[in-house]
Length: 430
Image 1 (cartoon, rainbow, N blue to C red):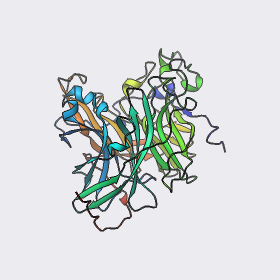
Image 2: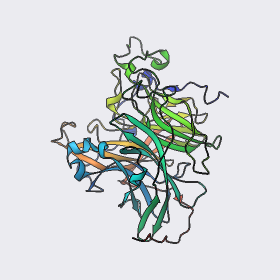
Image 3: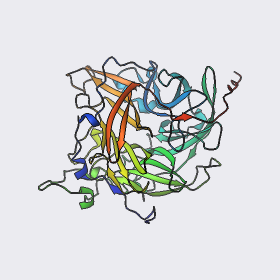
């Protein structure tokens, strides 16, 4: 067996990406009506995830569904297109709770401001601590865009609930997990546009150890990469690799926890080579996450039409890869191309930030939705989302996927209930 630190990453090749096509009904998000409901009139809402186990399954807590969301106050950003597109500068992690997984109540800010090592809180994972009754870890990205810092981090608290709702305590401090090292993953000195964010921790069933996926970039100076046969793949006769292909250098990264999970110590990690690279294809593989199903390992990630390089094209959406030999691969693209669910060409920016849970349910948010037959990039004719899209479901069938179900806006399905006392928790004194 090749060690996890000696293997080569699997390549999402240019030839694979040439197979990406929009509007296949089995791999395309349904068109959303322009009169979609808004979950929260006071907040923009985008990247979202359900409360889950570290093994991946969505859980409820004392009968409540819980989710975190990246949010920004509409009054602060401006409740218009300019405010929506500037939302990341005002982002923080909020949480919502629901009795039925459909009708949601905003609970407030998750992290105390004392936990913020940098101005912005970006995407991650809200995970119940194994072996505890109510300890929960928020893995997130601590960001300062002014000085180009992006550090996967974690803050710990406790979850509580009674008959009227859910609240959290703690989340007063943050631990930095790891940083881009310039050896396994590009850092800011190599690539001023480097991506290093979106931590997704999990237990690897093959060895019982805790690992973390994240978005990264191939190490090396931006623009200096040479596309070889390994990155090109099996190209058709006469095909020429497009100019600028070398600017696509996305990677799905992985690190192994060295310190103690049982003690809640997330301070020491071993950086490992990327699982999948997209050199020559795309410059972003955001929010990577994993599903273990029927002896196969499925990697999912989201990417944009605008981050394809070298003249390649593909829709905004969720992409995926499958391994028959566990987390370290090798991986091949799902559906031959990698595309799992893309936006329809009539609404190319309809949804984004898709997250696939172990049961195949896919949650995402609405970005911008054009009026039928209008320019999808014209703010005068599109409607801004900033709210959750209809949840859909996909079937995973070996190395293929199929869209099979459409559900309510922002709906969450739980695998089971977190094991905790059913007694209501006492509310803190105010």
